[in-house]
Length: 183
Image 1 (cartoon, rainbow, N blue to C red):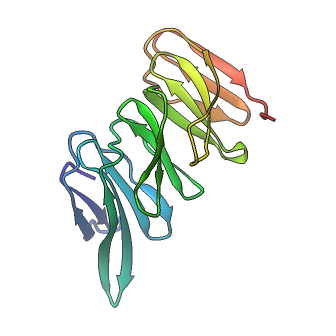
Image 2 (tube, one colour; image 1 turned 180 degrees about the horizontal axis):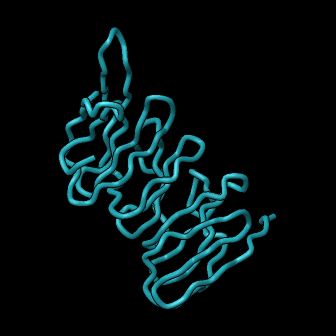
């Protein structure tokens, strides 16, 4: 990804395989794989685009399935879960339907980083102010399940999950939490 396009390059020889032109903006996010051959591309100025990449008769093809300005992701990557994308539209957490690019809901202005607890359908949010929140990964409505202050100070580090241990840190402190299943 660059500020003007997404390209695919053959890792063996460096040959360009395909290109998708799109003015993304200054902040470029990691593309998300939706399913085989389909990507979700996002940038802060243009919103989100779902593209299908295929290879037929010796030629690479890129087809735009939809483009949506309903979520302009500018910092954190998407979480793809059960046909929906969860991410930040500016500071607010939101949910986007992958079938048509329509926003389902926008929640609190956490501004932070997301992890998915897929077996529980829960999003774990680490806010840039050091708070931890649990959010229901449900496309019907935004529901915060719990929230507490985990560490103090500005937190621009992604949380890490190692088994049932959640690690959060910033330049001042670090904390570890043992996660248990929510009932």
